[in-house]
Image (cartoon, rainbow, N blue to C red; front, side, top):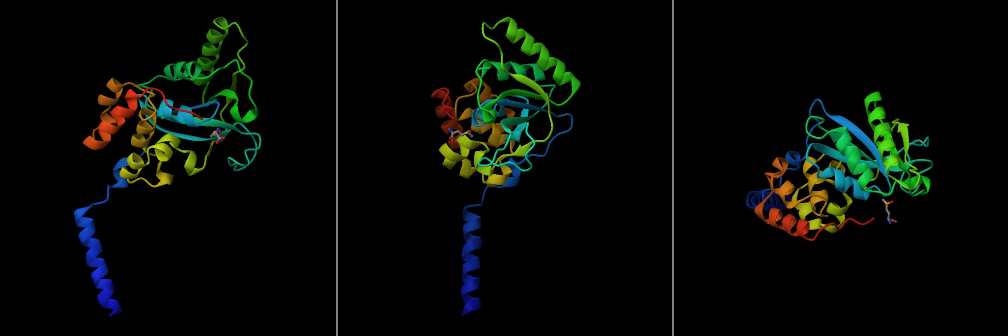
Length: 239
Ligand code: MHO
């Protein structure tokens, strides 16, 4: 009887699988291509930069986390001396570090002093990034009537934030779209498509950019028209 029930259950399950094949999560998780570089910025609450950078052409993937401090294994509730930050894997042949810096300066107030959790920092990963950062800061200082509080510090160790902070808007406010990707929460840090969608759904890039985004070719027509509607609403990211 038991065996019979198991047999029936498994054939029902396989029937279900045939009718509704689950989306292959693996298709939406990408490994890091060679020649990628990583940029790390802190600019207030990390949800917004995750969306902003995630949908830029040439950005391969992003993750939010904690850096700049000394506490081992920080968490959101026990941040210690760390700062909320964004790690961006990008292809320098498609998007330059200088362009990322421009977005950094343009998208937060670099003259406002905050508690350590929300500091404004450029964490450089090599000498080239250091001098580009210094140059861009000088330019900001020349054009600002108030002092720039942003610091430029060497990158040390990045601790990924909890899964629920990754691609926050996508997984919290656009649940149906998120579920349709078939991604597990812990795959959000590696998924290019999730990084892109998390930015587009809160209007961080244009309809043109969305329509010409080669990484999103696999999107279903239904998801495509949903995202188009979200882009039309304009910027929606709140922290
Ligand atoms: N206002 C938000 C900020 C979150 S951010 C990741 C909250 O209190 O949850 O710091």
